[in-house]
Length: 381
Image (cartoon, rainbow, N blue to C red; front, side, top):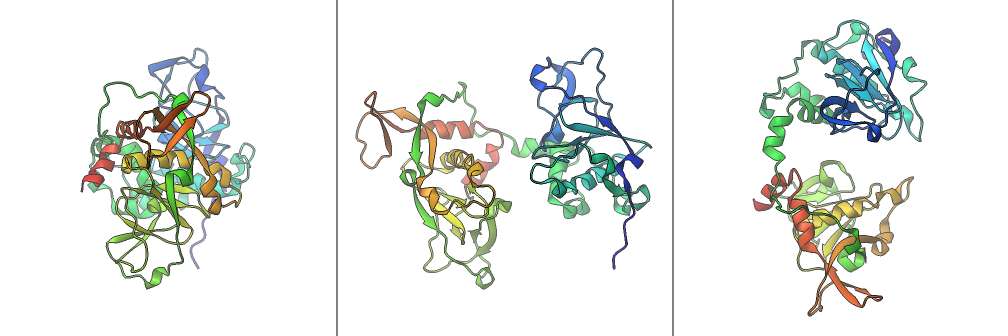
């Protein structure tokens, strides 16, 4: 049997302070102001914009932990190194004794591990104070010996124990400790656009999925019988871009082109994504092969994001399956004259005008986004 862990109420180690209950949109913005922390699991909980210091309302002190108490990011706990204000349904944990950053991060992880208790709309407003966490004398030795690398540390220097602990911890490291290094390597845009690319929804028209794509459904595939090779096999998982295994060529099974095909998990998850190389699909996965000519990964990525916005329709055990054929999404179009044979068009009966997919806009829009530098590097290999 493993060693039992002594736990204590969170109030034995931290002073639990109510959040500021502020509405971000009502605050005056200030580039040199105070961080605003809300109920999100992104960017250490910090909003992209800072707000002006509020007279008569002191911000929370640095070296405290912000905790979200409700919503999809419930119990997201983050160590805040600068003073900050908070939104609704937040608590702040102030340590009763001096703690290292490593110890504070350990307790952030412990709090997050209780997230599973708060499904189906449950909130932690009245239960956070009673939550049990490991006592100070139960903190693992590796936490005490750890030293968070300085911001200038290169990615290759991430300690192995840090990566092996959890993928989430590695992501946190890249987002918060080593952001400059990470963004300098991967955060660039592929193509700078001189004019601002505005999204004008008046030019967006509705399309059925089976008008845009030829839809293939994955058959049963015995993973254990496959021999490791150069081709990805895409499953219905969201992890690792859906790729579950690699295989050698499978005879009498469709190999899909990554340049013209999306993979889409349609049961268990609803998740469309591009793939970096040609791929096979397993069961519970569909392949969407473009029926329009002007297609590449950038256009597919744009459409995949739009398709994934329909995921809310398939919660609570609902599956997409054959409903995909009839699903409708809106995409940017452009008025165009000429020969429309073999082209996907929309006809506005009122104005008697013909529209075609504006794939040039989709491509430009995606290329101008951060982190597309890495996407195009994959595309050019």
